[in-house]
Image 1 (cartoon, rainbow over the protein chains, first blue to last red):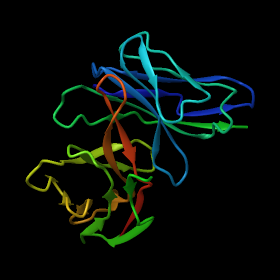
Image 2 (image 1 turned 90 degrees about the vertical axis):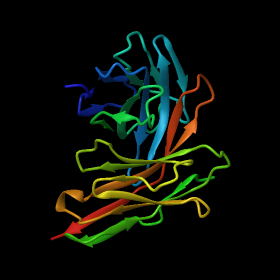
Image 3 (image 1 turned 180 degrees about the vertical axis):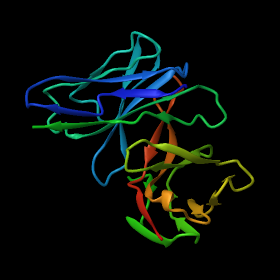
Length: 114
Length: 118
């Protein structure tokens, strides 16, 4: 079955630690995205990538880093520079020139800083 | 400035009845697209329905329909014959061009929590 997987589902981090959230897709989509969701809020864009080895900052990139070495994979690292990292993180992908250009989402990772 | 506004933090509906979730948007671009996503308690965002700014007819997808009023800049989601499984958060979103490369991002509203009562 084609889809987007994210791991882990739950992640706990101590202050000062970097953590990496995994996102893998087998939909053969070109573009991938990372969003952050806080309680009672919509999603906000952290980073996006349209092709391998290229990525761009979104609206709230400070304290985060990404890589896109393979088309299928777009991991997100939450660094110690991110002051308030506790949130729900969603990865998405899309294919260019589809009818709607809709984005397909993974199941999410809930990150808690202890 | 907020581009997507969902004014209903929570809505309640009886099973089998219809419900309308409100969404207004703000854009000066003549070409745009509007989406509705459902987020159950598991967290995954599920695409429901899409309306393009040039579409002549309101979008429909099974029990979901979109009441698109372009002059009012509103794109309300109508769910007919509500089911218990419809209880979830619902988000309205608009496509917005990204600065580089021709891709697009989604700008989301804050969502409406729908509860379907038996």
